[in-house]
Image (cartoon, rainbow over all chains, first blue to last red; front, side, top):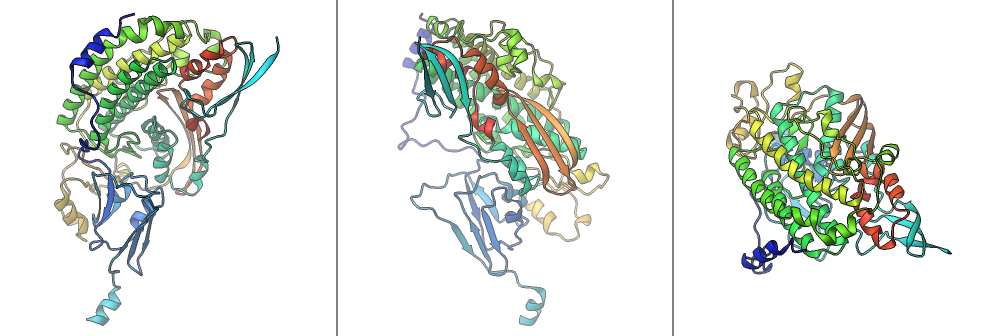
Length: 122
Length: 408
């Protein structure tokens, strides 16, 4: 009948297991897959992330130089970060902030010029 | 006595899963139960036609959040069997460790929910507090709390450093101490026994004939565990299945509680015996190609130079991934699965079976998933008649239902 007594006393005498959330925020461990970030200056628009993404949330237009991600569809598996040849994709260990609207991450970069175009401009 | 048909679920205050039962009751006694499924069907098996076999790993992980690691492990073992890939020994041990951690957090979650179902809120909080420690281990080692996503075809995506192994052992020692403090409550408490002992008895013959799996089967006296088939590193880590003989709800909860303690021992043993080496196989290497395996992770500068240099053959390959803490190993999978395979693993709820059929293209022909809850529904229907209506939530929970697994 009094099997839990020891635990109850221990719980009363030790500090609380929970936190006062808005005032005390628990940080995340190193390597936590939080938010997907793209350094668009280093992106070469190779479309590898778009092809490998299991949830197909990334769209890359290599002619217009745009990189689009639907964070609501992203499953935060980190596959795109691993396959990125230039390592311009990374994941920070913070969660994405809560939003009230469905938003899409749209990044505009400079598309890679073809060799012929490069030669012509030079 | 007039019979009444009572709809139970799919949404019920004490039932965490959307299982709908049509209960035929006489007075307060259940006479017959008929299940209705289909509330969370998502068609994940069909996705194999439009997602390639590598992307399917992330999809099968989402069949069920609680046993995501074991779904991916079963799928990867099947594809490796088709493609003839040898997994490095260290990766086998890592898969075992994460698989057992998943079993622990699933059992602790269930023990909490079970305590909640018969109204023992304090015990519910105690189990979930211990579970939080296991979730922290997952987050620190895998990068996520629930859907860990560490298995890839040919090995694992992450490694454990010696410091991380030491920390895991410390956390498990604390968890074990806390769990042992709750032993007398879950196994000997008057109120727990009053609600579980002798309720929903599944005899040994019924369990065999109706095809029960997992703790439901072992609670009825059968010493059968899919881990004995020797997947991952279980053939090197000897263990005996936990068996109880009474076949009632109490026996099933005792099996799960003792399995949690057993998993702690298995993880400790796996950490102690884990060999050094790579964590993922480069399939090119298996086929006889000596192309150095690209490794990414914390040695970013070196890797960038290696990746960007067009004359790869002249650049020295980075050393193998021996001491990289949580470093990622990118696996270069070449070739497509062509053939079929059946693989089995032991989920927290019981035996999970995958049938895979590849056709030589990057899309699989068929991915058939047979989950333990599906196998445990006929035993549930056999144990419900004769019980009181108030015991139905406890009995349904005693098989640990996972309807998202069952319907996929």
